[in-house]
Length: 287
Image 1 (spheres, rainbow, N blue to C red):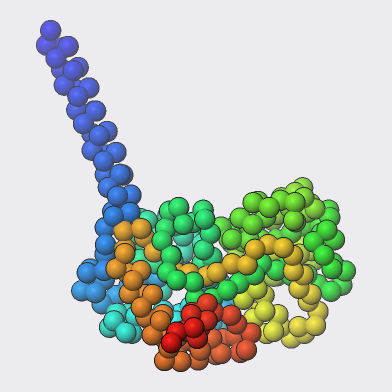
Image 2: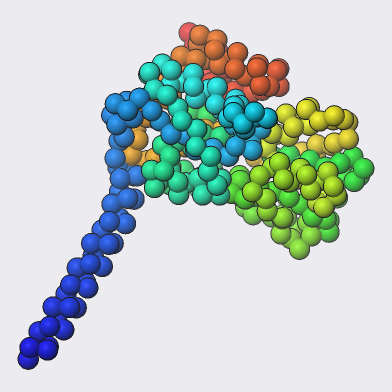
């Protein structure tokens, strides 16, 4: 009898431990979806922003090791309005949503494309920049359209919207490439190295990165950009579902930067005349 009681106590204890562990896991998700952290961030005067530090020109490490870029300048301008200092945290881009929901970071801000899949798990700011997916090749490859990639290796970044586009619309490009499966890279930098050395024949990449990278090469004329029918994307700031105040504050700051001309200055600094921001359109329509 005593042995049975002890067994029952042990079983109950084990169940309680399991329940506590499960409730702990659930609480992380619940906090991400329901907790508003603005008061903590405002009190600490610091916000942690996750980014891929190889994503030129949005957010990247320059030769001196300093994190810089368009998104870095824009984030600094936004949070300067609230007396908050952004801390830029390098992350594995394929784990960006996990890092956000685990509160390792407070925001994803690095050319983060707004997609239906991502909107299921995170909220977004208003879109601040428009972007296209482009196929970058070497002119010597004689690739003039997507079907010319037939039997050839294609590179794409892990966790990128480009990878999502390939899988969501396989008839546009995926059906042509070698093994109908792209070569995955942790960064566009490494992908360009392989492209330049002929290890891949094409690279599907964000137009913002492609335009900047090619323009800063010793001989930009070596490259060709091929456009297809992938839908145009819009970049937004990834925000936890529960951070409604954060979302409102960022959107309000965007509006102010668009109206006072600072957004235009940041755009020109990084893109010259080659940029397209929905925020400016919205401001131009204001009476």
